[in-house]
Image: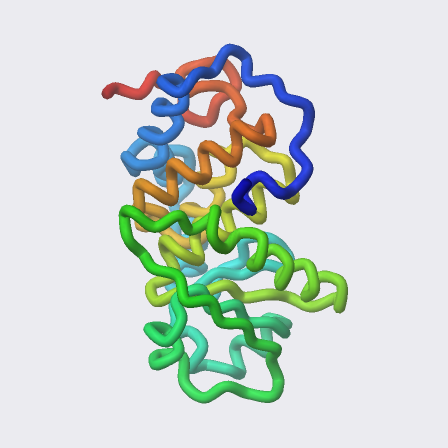
Length: 222
């Protein structure tokens, strides 16, 4: 059994969701128009404030969890100003070469994951990533998760962490992350499928797209 299933799930209630039904959730995430935060935010001042956050990573996903690409680590003073104490690199040497010299001010962990369509990111690395994040929380710190671009490898990790910790439905979690990081957040289809399956395991699919209470108000076309 892979680490995706290692955290104790809530009682199963899949509401009749079969494998085909999961595709609605996958498509709602894969096609960025369905979870485009700009469709929900009409006030121009609020839009500009959100864009300013996106343009100045690391971006907060939770109070103690941040996301960025590797080059954001070059500004160590900003990291310190955000209260970041731990740095999780999930792109291995590919990102290490971009992040600059490591500092004694932070606790680092590096995982050499790949951003490929056939790579099982959560199955291989979620347990290890969550363990590092948990150790950060136990110390009262804040963790930055990054890969090279801060979109897929680190993106699916922070989405999974937020979903499991807050128990929010998967589509609401991805919407929040895209609002913070931008619409390019999480486009690797294998990672999306893994996240949706993880949500099903923990009864966190939420209403299907087009159903009452779903953040995606319309049915997904296939």
